[in-house]
Image 1: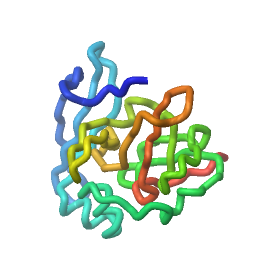
Image 2: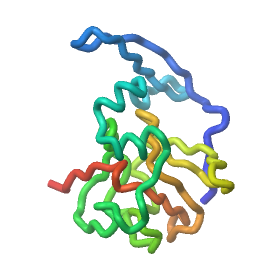
Image 3: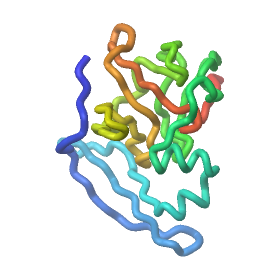
Length: 170
């Protein structure tokens, strides 16, 4: 399967403003496809707002594109059935049904729950060319995707545990 990396998005963006209880303005972006169907609400917060809400290590990984050491994340060998959500905004991202042990040291999935829940961008950091995986709703850095995964997709979404929150199957 070939990856579609975000270059020129084919979406229309409509901005609208809301005010929170603390009277701080926040911006949300309504994303629609070329037929006008709403996909999700985009969340925009300042770095200061994210820093106040998130644990320092979660902030480093998700907002500053850090990574957790291999083989240390709490979901690396996690086997429970359920859904993995974005730690920053709660967006459903991956199912335990597509999780597998890639031997990489990070939780790996061969497909997202919904392709629209993720954004992919070229990452040329550290002298490598990789594809970064971000939450489409809040732009949290989740990890990277590689084209060496199992069938049926051939993809390996290599995701930081600290960027995820698990919701057990009911």
